[in-house]
Image (cartoon, helix red, strand yellow):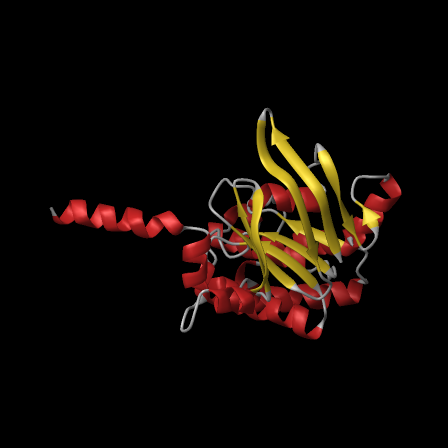
Length: 259
């Protein structure tokens, strides 16, 4: 269980999050979606403990983030955060990096090595796993960063735009199926952001819509689709709820182009 309680976050004098209250149930996958620059990444960073809110707090399984060193260490043992642009040790090989992360999370060595091998195969990294990360393409670096989050075996995953950054179709398919398995079979809790509505319904059961630093809507994805009307898709519902001006702007652009 993750609770976000009355969280307010400012950058200088600009409010980015305004009194956010949310709950993320154990064993669920929740997608945070909204326009660019409206607080999605900031909210995930506060949940991950990399930002300390000016007001409010985040509670994970009964422990408050950044309250005491002991509680924060206990949280970090069960929660992994993967930023959109993850720092990578460029002189390490991919396999060395995964081994280092796994040891940090105290994964038993034989289990760790076996898991690392399965991950590099899953994401088609076998041929370059023993090469320095600096030689990897952008997409390959995205894959090894995803592997580094997965190797921790944490029951809570906070993932900022895991499907972006040059991930190829095979990587997208593998990640989608992994996320589905995590909540369906392993009862893990996943919270992620994505700018792509089409991916939401395939990987998540819950949705949080952020706009102008506030929660515009939240709930089960099935509820969003039902509210959009008969025959509607999730993309239709999000078009109406999150991007209502896009249709008008598109029509205006096309009409000017035709004239």
